[in-house]
Image (tube, rainbow, N blue to C red; front, side, top):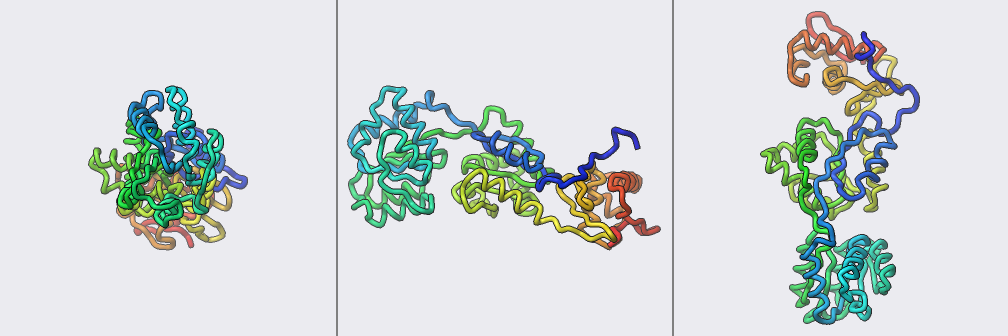
Length: 375
């Protein structure tokens, strides 16, 4: 075996996500999330599925702000810290007296970050839910806790998600609702990375896809639809590729497509990374093969604590054998799993390279029948 064919190995305490590939669809804070995953050993693929329309160029936000300023507002709902802060800063840059206009208004915060932005802007937060959810804010408003809604002006700061159910429920209660679309999200200027991600999901060469916003989840599905591969993406994300969303709002477009995603208990990037750490390795069983322990991961195998990275051919053979430990698989059966196909000789070459990379006798030849793991 030449040096170029030699498979890299990690001999000491592999990181929890070593051997896995995780995709990041975020536009904002993607480097932060990617670093959290990479520090835990993941191979990170960046494919921003959205881009943010700059506030300074957003005529729609200017129009919404002027509508808020046209008459007194009774209630304001701040849904995100960065969004509410950005709105106040943009209004100030446009010389629009938004903060002064809202001083006598009851401002509700969806969570602690929104509450911090309200206070940082010189306003007073009146109430926030324990759950940090828009649903609880809506329940609070509809309960009459802030008084009757009929005829009252309510400004709702949006952050990418239009919150149609939230807004429609307030309007049905008789309120005049002013939606403020802060940080509108649209498709990225360069859609090549997200198109590649669609192909990788379908080919199952990524192990997990992370989502930090509902628009990013919706955008990925839109791009898949444009490529004629939406059904394949949905199938992959429901059977093999792990979708992990930062929270239920983010997961909503996935759920609407029939995709059940994993979510951390708290909607934070650190919690999202920990959810990936907890869930990816647990789905791959540790096999006892003779005197050895083997765990087959995304693009590598953990053999007696050593991480052995494998080329696609040997990896496909090991994955097929580990899926049916102890069962003899014929060459034609193994050919079907090889990337790009092949023949019996291609299987023999893949097995030879697999054995050399593993360094321990795990794969047994059964004469005239095929190969199996020696469990």
